[in-house]
Length: 395
Ligand SMILES: Cc1cc2nc3c(=O)[nH]c(=O)nc-3n(C[C@H](O)[C@H](O)[C@H](O)COP(=O)(O)OP(=O)(O)OC[C@H]3O[C@@H](n4cnc5c(N)ncnc54)[C@H](O)[C@@H]3O)c2cc1C
Image 1 (tube, rainbow, N blue to C red):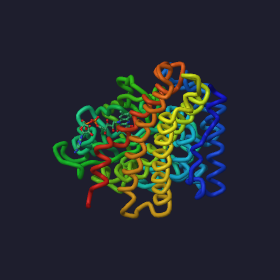
Image 2 (cartoon, helix red, strand yellow):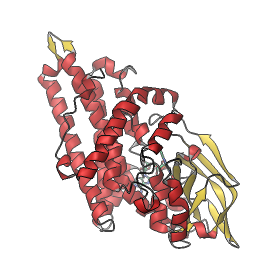
Image 3 (tube, rainbow, N blue to C red):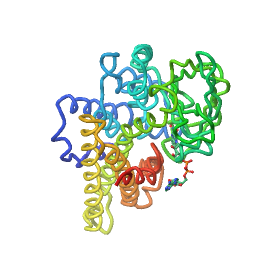
Image 4 (tube, rainbow, N blue to C red):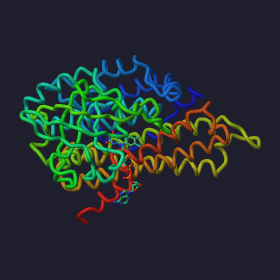
C-alpha cells in the first residue's frame, strides 16, 4: 500500500497563503515524514518507545527546537511553522510529530513569555541544541480541568522555593530534561491567584519519575507522573513576573499552543483519508473498484471537505497568533481550531478505517492506529469541553 498512499488530494487553499520559507519548512517536514518516520511508525506504536536515532535526527534537523528564536540559536518557528511541521509528520505518525516543537510548551514559550533576560540567555541556547525534551506539569490526580485545585506547594525559603507534590499524565515527563511546573505559593485552599509557575531542571535533587502511563494511542510519547520532594528551585526561576502569576502564564502558553494540537488532527485525518482513498481505488468488490461506488465517493467528499474546513480555521488562527498574539479573539480562535480539528479528525479516522472494511480494523494497516491517536487530541491542552468554555468566555 505504501506507494498508493503517496496520493495526496488534500492540497487545499491553505497553501496559497504560505511564504516561500514556510513552504520550504513544510517540504522538509514532508520529506522527514516520508523517508525517516513512515518506515518506523508502526514499530513506534508497537513498542511504545521512540528509537533513540529518531530523537537525535529530529534535533539535528532543528525540529525539536523549532520554536527557539534565532537570536538564541533556534529556527525561530512561530505557530504557523509549528502547525505545518506537526501536520505533515502526523500524516504518518502523530507520535513522531509530538517530537517536533516538543520543547515549546514546557520550555521555550514559558521562558519567552515569562522569564528574565538572564534566564532566557541561560536556558534557550541549551534548548536550541535540540538535545532536550521538556514538559509542562500542571495536572494532578485530583486537578485536571480545574487547575485551581492543584495541591503542589512551593514555599519560599531564602533564595529558593521548596516544592512538594505529584504531577500526573505529564507528556514527555519521564524523559524531559527541563520543564515548567505549577505550584501554590499561597494557601492550597486558595484558587488560581495562589498559583505560581517555575522553570526547573529535571536533574535537580528531589525530582523523580513515578508511574508511567499506558495509553490507547500516541504510543511512544512517554507520559507519566513527576514527583517533587523537597525540590529547591531558585527564586530566580519563578515565571510570569512573580508569585500568583502562574495560572495566567500557563493559560497564555496553552492559548498559543492549542492550534498545534489541531495540526495533529489535520495531519492524522489527511493521512487516514489519503491511505483509504488509495486502498479503495485498488480494492475490488462486485466486479469494480470500491472507490467506484457512489457511497464510497460521498464518504471521501465528506472527509476532504471537513479536512479543508479544519485547515482553513487552523491556519487562519495560526496567522492571527503570529501577527497579533495578544489580540482578544485569539483565545477563542485557538480553542475553536483545536476543538474543531480534533473532532473532525476522529470522524475522518473512523470513516477512513471503515472504507477498508474489516482490513481497516487490523494492525496490518495504519488506520486503527490513527483512530487511536486521534482520540488523544480531545484531552490535550484541556479537554474539548473546556475548549468550548474558552470559546464562549466573555460572550
Ligand atoms: C495523552 C494525555 C497527555 C496529557 N499531557 C499533559 C501534560 O503534558 N501536562 C499536564 O499538565 N496535563 C496533561 N494531561 C492531562 C490533561 O490536561 C487532563 O487529563 C485534562 O485537562 C482533563 O483533566 P482530568 O483528566 O482530570 O479530567 P476532569 O477534569 O476530571 O474532567 C472529567 C470530565 O469532566 C469534564 N469537565 C470538567 N470540568 C468541566 C466544566 N467546567 N464544564 C464542562 N465539562 C467539564 C471534562 O471535560 C471531562 O470530560 C494529559 C492528558 C492526556 C490524556
